Amino acid sequence: MLQLAPGGVSAILDLVGGHALDLTPRLLSKNGRMASVIDPNRAMELGGHYVFVRPDAVDLANLVRYVEQGRLRVHVTQTFPLDRVDEAHRLLEGGHVHGKIVLTL
Image: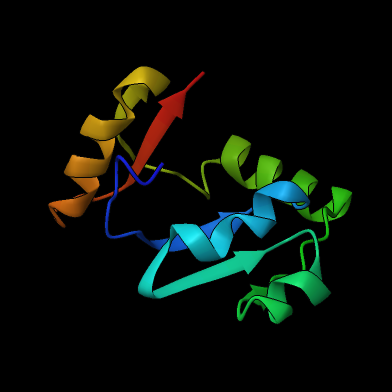
């Protein structure tokens, strides 16, 4: 990873925990920030933040209903396959994206 970003990365969002979370300090740049949705204690020990995430079936159903009713629209600027994530990131870094950039698997 550091070969791609020798100075470290500015932000990490941990969605895995465990060993992956332990690698975070080595991957962050000097003023980098990290957050975890998995392990609040370890995230805070590492100087990061814990983000509480709770899936809610009612909220998700409401979002689906809003989309079906046309009350919620998500504008997708561009879609990239995962192997072109570098292009997607450059587009995002350009700062002129209006909408979402989607990576497909």
